[in-house]
Length: 324
Image (cartoon, rainbow, N blue to C red; front, side, top):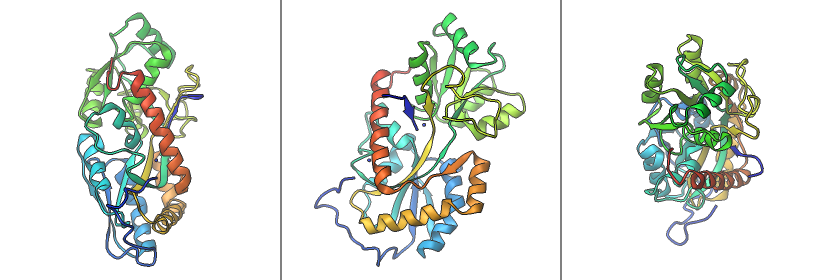
């Protein structure tokens, strides 16, 4: 990679799946937006902000359906099997491309098995937070401590290929440090153990980090995005803190099953693009540490293919799931 950027792909399935509708027919019934994670996470918050506007623009209810399991694999695989008529959407995070290289039980290809609609939003990166008991007040002190004590420091891993795992492994690779991964079933469990001091550090979403940093329960030493976030203006980026070329942001994309008609894709993209530009949505996104993007479908297809390639490269470097 020229720049180790991971922002933490369009083929029909063939004869077995016909393009059942044109834009003039679409939508003819309520639209299900499958989120392959538990309720209450960032994808749900984004859909809560733009959902009513999509309903108004498309003339049918746009309903969120959470299908959690397997770190996102269950819900994503479900959408890949649905008709490509535009009435079943997948809305998820960068885990769409990041999860497959770290899991042998993925039955779908994140590039070939989906129609790519848009990158709707992205954040300013994950916050690297440490427990106050860790004797490091900035990133360089943390890395120096890790080098003095190889394998002694620990990081919380909320799932291989997730936004807590990818930046941690990338940091280890770029800085030559040996930090032990401690696996957790999700962000909530990992955050609880970090607060209790049972693990030393965690790459976590900025909104979760902020509430604990403000109380002094955790210390933020860096952000993984390209630029600082105004919610934590004094926290430097990883690059500013001395790790050149480090950029990992979480992004939120929208897909249909492979083979969806281009005119349906275009109509959905237009509706999403208009929604994320509404002033009230922009204000909600700002509060959540997000920015609307609404990338066009062709650019998004290229983007997803590139992200899948980068994820495969990282997966190979950490031996496709090795976490030490």
